[in-house]
Image (cartoon, rainbow, N blue to C red; front, side):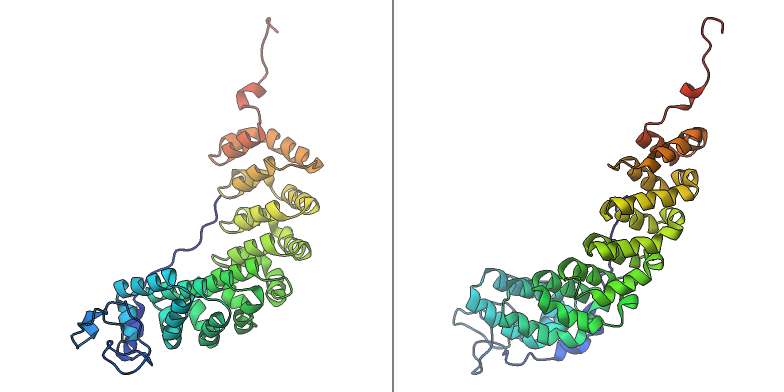
Amino acid sequence: MLDTWPLTSGGDAAANYGHANRTEIPGIQDCPHSNLQGSIPGMMNSSNCDLSCNNGMKPTICSAGALLNDPEQCNDVMAQLSSGNQVEQHRVLLWLQKVVRLLALSKMGCRIVQKAFEVASGTDHDMLIAELKDHVVELYESPHGNYVLSRAIEILPAAKNNFVISALSGRWAVVSRHRFGCRVICRLLEHCSDEQMGELLSVVVAEADTLARHAYGNFVVQSALEHALPGRRAAILLQILPDFGTLTMHRTGSLVAQRALNYCDVEGQGLAIQALLRSSVVDVACSHYGSYVIEQVAGMRGNFSSMQDMYGILAANLQQLHASEHGERVVLAFGLAPVESLAPTVENGV
């Protein structure tokens, strides 16, 4: 079974931040006729420029609302960031500085901020962080802002991700269950050290069984099983083992069970198989989600005596497996004989 991320809804961020349409960006003027500095040549926005510019320079963007609502202007800024040299990129980043938060929370602007993190370095990264660090909760809750945080975590050195970790400290259980917050946490687990994520991992261990059954929390447990140190991974497994059979039949719990079988060591895998044997393994094999877990067990490499025990139980209940559309998957995975071949044969009148 494939684990898929929950789909995000678009939403018109400009509707929620309509006041931004009337907010002038500090230092940015309508066109090159201005005596003040700060405009970025090459960005088109003739509707915002009341003066006729005949000096060969295109009019420039003058308001945050222009970027929040105009895909063409967003693309212009993206092009400047992608193709400009380091000096030009720095100038664009300085120009964006005071509207980074508004852009990060908007459908189109969040792409600009993600690109800004990609092309920035050193002090420019610090500048972007300074503008966002007090708004981390707002960003992770946003259908657009969460992508900005996730991209920043992927790009920044691990130590610089502490602004996200500090903001979410004490909130891990809530954020793990959030539709967008779970994505941010998974990126942290992928790119930060076990020491940095210690507080979160303690929460994941303590609540592993309930998180595994949660629509969004299960992704956090899966990520922890994949990226945490072996000791943390073993601790998570111990939390989910007591009800492992039932977990494997749960829609999201089965994904966690499969991830545990993938990433736990041989001892942990053996414990998981024994836990399945203590449950009704035939019922698990005949269930929609559990059948995928048993199929995975069939393909595991390892000298597990308990595998023979599982084979024997499944073979003894072959008719029940054949009667289930999901059980057929297990029959094929274990190479169990068809029902007909188990019937006694009559040869030479005997």
